[in-house]
Image (cartoon, rainbow over all chains, first blue to last red):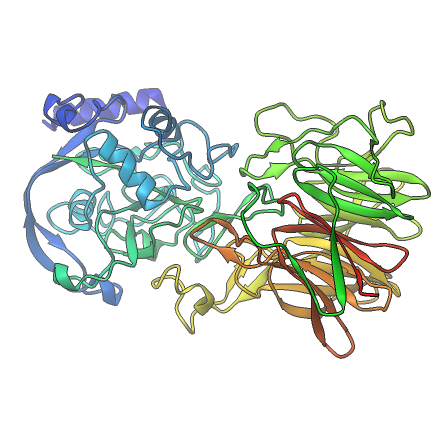
Length: 261
Length: 342
């Protein structure tokens, strides 16, 4: 596994992708990012395809929009990383901190509320991704169906659910969450891991129909993206929007990652 | 409960009973008209089990691990060295649960191990206390996941395993055999639409939670089992079902529905079923509402219900005493005796 990760990092550098480790500009806004194994990977700004016309009603419309460049964690935030934040940032422990499987150091942290996730990112001078940032990172500029492309979701590409809707299984090698970065074939071309599958990821902002003016936004629900270890293929699509109350912290399949400038 | 279970999309942990909280500044529980309620001060922080022994009471404490006898004069005597307590892997308090008396011998169920220590043989076990209070209990069986309530049916121990979602009969070889595996409870997804509008749509697929059996009572060859219901503890989602102990019926019979997290059930002297409900779950507080617990008497023939005690703060156990009064414990520290007004 360690070798695979090194190979992945080498490919990223070969592709000319800037891997951010301890940018002093970001450190000014928060504590220095202390996790070099989970670097922030640069995603170029510019135009990209956002939304979908062939999905759920709340994914419409498919449109082309522009956003500035940003950086995003290579992997979902792990239990080890989150536990360090709990100590250093006086955060709240995850609901599954003591769980023998879900709580393993190399697994994505789950059982955290939106506020927990937001506090983690802000402590390190970062933020949760917006839905636009997530889609740009996950589907590229041209609108991929999954993080790796349009090829089917197979056990070597993604930590996901059973073949038939909608339960978990161990066909991908893990009965629940997988160690982050376990599916390099499922990485984006920039090398970002698990944007499809493993755990749902909290987004910045509120759940509303696209195009809702800020003044008219309903502030009841937050959004999670990307699907999880128990998701069927339909919900693994990069455009699928899952709305939940932000204070819900019992999910064994809900985690997050952060973005920076 | 030991394993995470899944909602249609967001998976959750199902929780066993045992929500240990700090005492709340709430009003005292109230008895129904015609009854009086006496508070019994013993000094247990989180009483979790109670059994009548003549006029005395046997009690367990989830906080300290103590198992005590409370004599009629108020004297409290420890019956054994304290059992292990702590927080299990799901973040819930664990330790001694229920206590039962059988032929003058005292038995207790012990929960899952504390997450911060190695497992012991006395964990997730049915234990028998030694005759001498300084001696350690002996293990009747530790082949359970989460043994909660239990009772003697005249031939063997019947044990509710809240982790296996099953009613077990303990064989002479110390191995439990499942008499009934409780299927998951189905709910209308609209019950959860406030949690997620994209996942729980009215008219959508049924939403299932673990049954999580808790209380056990026997009568006329049937086992009456309280079903607490799994997370997120939908309001009025709990139930009591009954099973024929001779195995003649393959299906459980639904006796009572519309309960809020029933944690124990026992028959009163007048034949009514007494059900102790934890109360409604507060998602914001991430706990059961303080002071929302109640004791209800239910006539199973007519369906008539009468609330005998309201305002209980996370009640945990009940016992019917020989004189017909009812003793109720609460995890917030209260112990109460309900009797008819003179």
